[in-house]
Length: 224
Image (cartoon, rainbow, N blue to C red; front, side, top):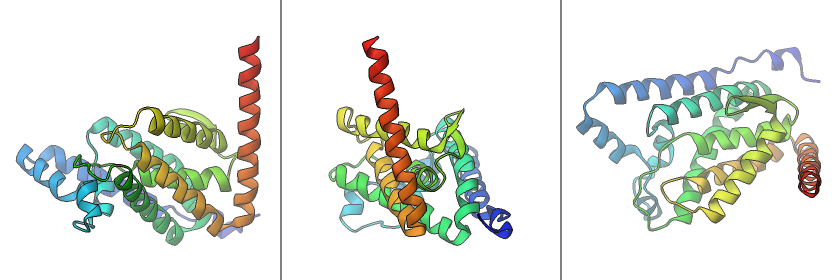
């Protein structure tokens, strides 16, 4: 059982991240197109440039930029629904490290997957995948959302993992950061074991059992 003060933690980091992303998105709509182009040129992640050891600040700044309103809204909703729960559970200090390190890991994995790419990468999804991985392993039965459908976190983690793996393998495209999502998810999963190895181990066992149950259920329906 968690102490009452742990349950009552305010997810201030999640709210500050959402506020920052919202203000930046609003700024992009307020300034002229030449300024938007310059902002994206200066702060989006370009794999080839990063792997040359240049503009390393973009491993963080790319997280706060989004390619459009729908991209922003989906990421904002995912961060709100997963971030509030995870931050309250692990604390704000560990949460801010989880978020930014997951985002950096996501950017590096994408860069390594496409080392010659000069296509700019933006978005908080890699960092958010890290948060979702922690939620999946530490609180597998906590209700969260897959898009806008409420589901247990373990189901959300399994579905997102399968979608991203299949997308990365069969539909590899440097303009869609599937490897970044997987990088953030993997880093978050490892972080869960550092945060609480016993709960993470239990969560992993639950995830494997749920996956096997879903697989067998799918096979049974196919054979009908």
